[in-house]
Length: 333
Ligand code: ATP
Ligand code: FE
Image (cartoon, protein in one colour):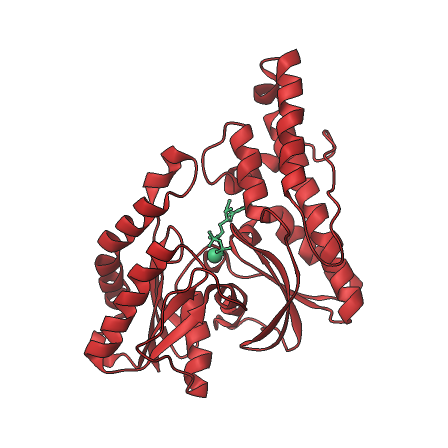
């Protein structure tokens, strides 16, 4: 099969073409416009999707070396995400499916982040059941995955997502949006134990990050009062300490989930799984007999290839959407 997939849930317009479970092309157009606002502006995002979508789809087809007429099905992100952004991708996918008279497949964005592990790059893929740990700009979840589309959220954040904790802490330090990748880079040369930050409490397998963000803010405000150049002088150590604490918060509950479920296969996914510290920490659990899975870098932040692979497994089951399907900003796993 040849599946064309579209992802437009937030601020990246992406289109991929897959031949069965292999990626032929995966074009991602980011949106520079949001950097100067320090976060994603929904109105501007949907407008940028509108101007990006046609060229991005054309480029994906061109790179894949096939024409529209060769396509077998169209997959798209139904949600969750920003309504205005999702509408651009879903409307486009629907019209394409209608025009080409081929099946339409709706995909859950978070399924995409998890199923990215099954994109065939001749690597070892997870066996069911496994624990999917989705860490991104809007989610922090521990998910019990029993089949391609059978997923149960067994832990989630009660307030901010871990990506927000990275981004908002970075904002306090004067880093641009998104700060996550910059903190990662700066942390590599810093001392992770220089500044101890608190680990917020949350029940069971759940998370809380809003207290952490506030603690960083107060700490910086207090230190800057004493020394206006505090951030400048200690930036690498502050970033390393922030990242160290976020990794600690994350893996405390992952360890607990492994113990509780007895499932020792863990796969991370979502934008924050690009983080080098988190990748290294997960790899270290191999010593404890865990099977660990880290997605290729290009499939961590939002991309259409992950929507394509999710669509492919639905395609094999004949699980298609009708034309009445609607974009849904909030949908259950
Ligand atoms: P969701 O998937 O929950 O709807 P999203 O689609 O907006 O959210 P993603 O694109 O999956 O989010 O991830 C974006 C997030 O990943 C941002 O918060 C960004 O800072 C973070 N991120 C990306 N690279 C890194 C990194 N190397 N270290 C830490 N965080 C990172
Ligand atoms: Fe995402």
